[in-house]
Amino acid sequence: MTLGSAGSSVVVPRNFRLLEELERGEKGIGDGTVSYGMDDGDDIYMRSWTGTIIGPHNSVHESRIYQLKIFCDKDYPEKSPSVRFHSRINMTCVNRETGVVEAKKFAVLGNWQREYTMEHILVQLKKEMAASHNRKLAQPPEGTYF
Image (cartoon, rainbow, N blue to C red):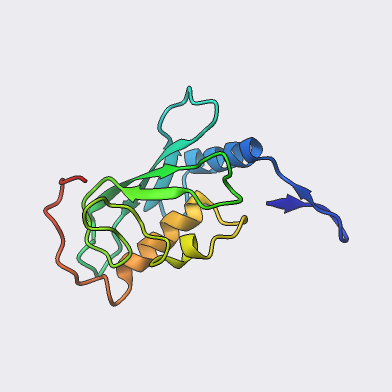
């Protein structure tokens, strides 16, 4: 996120950016089907986050609640966070053994831009669930975890 006018820009420091994302996540996002927050409120580096996605309508994911772990290393937002499903899911961009969202198969992570946010990742993952190549894939039993 950069701020400035007419050719000048200021890069918002990592912790300010994460505080902004935390505030937005706590207020709720859009229709309430994606949310996120910190795992540990005492983590001064704001690295470990939890995300939740309620599966999209008209798909095998409908009404399922998926939990994810998001890790923002010290170089976030210059580099993408690591994202891993905690809830078991079958999607083409998710490693079946570990639940890791693979950057090579998920464009948001693979073509990361500093302006992207955790909210953007979760919204795009939800859209990916509804995509034709994912919306009818057989799923593991609900309530199972990686």
